Amino acid sequence: MLEDIYTELIAEHSRATENRRQLPNATVKERGHNPSCGDDITLEMEISDGVIKDAAFIGQGCAISQASTDMMIELLRGKKVDDAKKLAELFINMIKGNITDDDALEPLDEAAALKNIANMPARVKCATLAWHTFLNAKDLELKP
Amino acid sequence: MKMNGHRMAYLDNSATTQKPESVVRAICGYYGGCNANPHRGVYELSVKATKIYEDTRVKVQKFINAKSPAEIIFTKNATEALNLVAFSYGLHNVNAGDEILITITEHHSNLVTWQMVAKAKGATLNYIYLDADGNLSEKDIAEKLTSRTKILAVTQISNVLGLKNDIKTLAAQAHEVGAVIVADGAQSVPHIPVDVQDLDVDFLAFSAHKMLGPMGVGVLYGREKILENMPPFLSGGDMIEYVEEQDTTFAELPNKFEAGTQNVGGAAGLSAAIDYINSIGFSEIERIEKELTDYAIDELKKIPYVELYGCNSARDNKIGIITFNVKEVHPHDVATILDSEGVAIRAGHHCAQPLMNYLGQNSTCRASFYFYNTIDDVNRLIDAIKKVRTVMHLN
Ligand SMILES: Cc1ncc(COP(=O)(O)O)c(C=O)c1O
Ligand SMILES: [Zn+2]
Image (cartoon, rainbow over all chains, first blue to last red; front, side):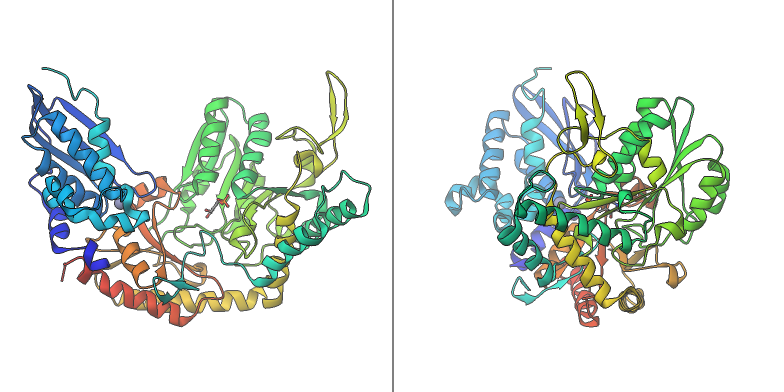
């Protein structure tokens, strides 16, 4: 059970540093946090022509929240905002346990590795923090 | 009790304790046999409910050695008790330019409340910080407790560091400058004998659920002279004497502060909880908790990647609470891994964010004991902690 959550892949993503930075040309900046857990991230994105050109984050929190944020950034970078929103909804539905079919989850790529969090109610918020933060971000549609 | 297939080591007693059967039976007994609205009926059942409630008040009075049952006010928890003091005493006795003094170790319930009073009245909220060993800075106390201080609000035992504050000395110092002292007893009353007359405190707040009793009942002790001059906190039924269309006179103490139908089932549970604690005795409770705490600190100190907070103080000043971190692992991951081994601890800011900032931590792990814990529970904690870094692929 625990091994299904704290996989090597998730441990690596939780400690990865490439996506931990600020973007000089960010058009979107959104902070999200879990008061109960202390996970706290600020997501930055550079969006132009409806495409996420670059994304990065700064913040701190548990391995699950940090790995999930890192994975989301890698998944969404280069995607159209509309497609990115669909992916975020798919991810949240996976964590809620609404979608379990592996084929349906394929678009999530590595982020599908967090599927088992669906069985850990206490950690659901950690896994979904980045994705909710993205969906909550204002100015997603803003044209520079 | 089982957790994730293991016999559970419940080490989150500072959050809430487990309940003995006698407490559960007392609550069931009340609802099963004596349920009626107290104070309001003339029929036998209501008289019985009133008796249970008022007998519990006397039991609490004796438990903390208050002078009179009128000084014991039932609330829903320690938080509501502290709010009662803040709103009913604080708002009416603190003025612009006055100061309120608290400590950096306060639980949010004894901190945000005073922030609100200070903001509402244009008063200043000052903090007593800590010495290197985690105890309150004598220097801060000497400098910040002055004739401008109207209220000194201090926890008797920190829910993060487990360190005992010398409330008796602080009370004397507060009275010398004309301030009242509000003691937060949420973590002390369950674990050490508390005598409000000996401590000479003006207010003391605590919760039944942290001392074997049910959730939903708390106690505010207040010095009778002070309570008498305070306006009611909540208004409504049971707290009145005469009500006319435009005016009301209020009931005597303690009913003045107990508006609406009260938690009699909860009081029945608290009464049984006090009986249980008395049957064991504080000297035994303190002996067991000290043994567990000392053993756990000694064992944790042997693990090179465990950081301890508030564990450098003299040991006789420390009770039942150990706060720590595992290097490079977030407390929530530690708690999840311990949970999978059947060990229940708390991770987070423990409702003491200013203290976390002061310690330079975002959050921490906390193991807290009660007298029913065993050395085996501590060993389970230590063994589980030793697995954490492996699970996180750090070794
Ligand atoms: C020191 C301290 N004060 C106050 C409280 C608040 O207690 P309650 O939540 O029962 O009102 C707690 C418990 O969390 C505590 O540890
Ligand atoms: Zn988390």
